Amino acid sequence: MNKTLRSIIWLVAVITLSAIALTMIDRFQGEENVPAEQDPARRASVLLVVYAGEEVPGGRDPAEFQKVGCEDLLVPYEIDVSSTRLKSVLHALSEFEPPEGYHNPLKEKGIRVVDVADRGHSTVIVELTGTPQFGGVCDTPRFQEQIRQTVKLYHEEFEIRLNGSESAFRCLSDMSGECK
Image (cartoon, rainbow, N blue to C red; front, top):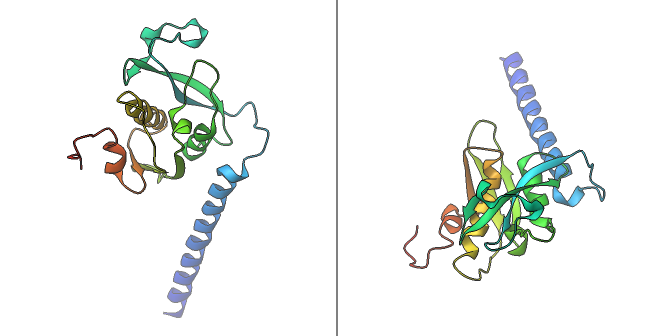
């Protein structure tokens, strides 16, 4: 019995220390500890928006990109990141100032990425916080789809929550008040 109890205590200690180590790794890779100069070899794909009627930078054919909102385009773009984990990618995107011709609704709306709970093979939960202000019917879908499609580049199954609620994110464009 004493040997069994000692084994259980050691197991709990190992699990606890592992959890602490993983938390410290996440904090180290978080936005507040990103070094001033990024490793140019560490880049990640994200999606930025090109407004309808604007020329796609680089002379690329608009027909090859997904349309969103009011005929706007979601265009792949590579940004510097501290890590290619989704949490780091979204943190970097939320602070990324796009070059001329591109727009970054995540940064423009002042939304912060609080956490990305990636538990391996289960659904990834993206936690956002803030109160976005939208400028019309085209604005909300740009914002939502940029985030959805960027997350989809890294995980097929995910849930996005705004201020702790999945429906708050999903119902952003609902003007009827009936979305739940």
